[in-house]
Image (cartoon, one colour):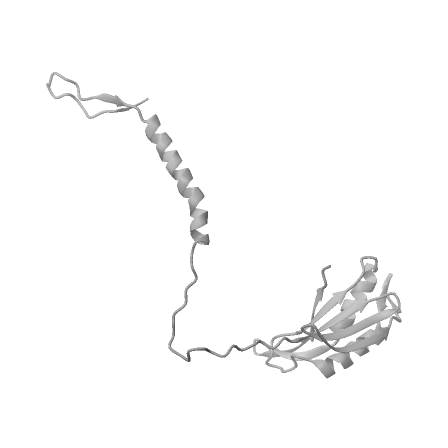
Length: 187
């Protein structure tokens, strides 16, 4: 129990000190805090996005964004399949034999695919999206592979993609960067 002290009675016959039960007040306070915490999450979800109505033509003509070309590289048992797509439309389809070269790098042997490297360079020169020095975007390369492909061969494919380079202006300097932003396909 909590008490409230208001001082001496000051000579009056009746004492002004009394005990006030604070437990119901604390219970009410806790319920209020819990209610506010639970409803605070819904407040952010109930907002309406509004934009300003700017005067203009009554029905603006919709501008459809042009989809960029994407290179899909499929790793198969017999070779590589290079497919350029724009949206769902196939622009080019090229087969590259899977002939690997092993290079000794210290104690380990590193796999390289020179035919794939040359084919990626030729394909990019023909179908590139981003080639200007001031353009900070890279062309998209999606790598499709089976789960059974050894890691060292997967690294060799990514190295072949990173070998093709172009100049890009970054922070006032011009540097050679890979033309492809390589990502993996998800099934």
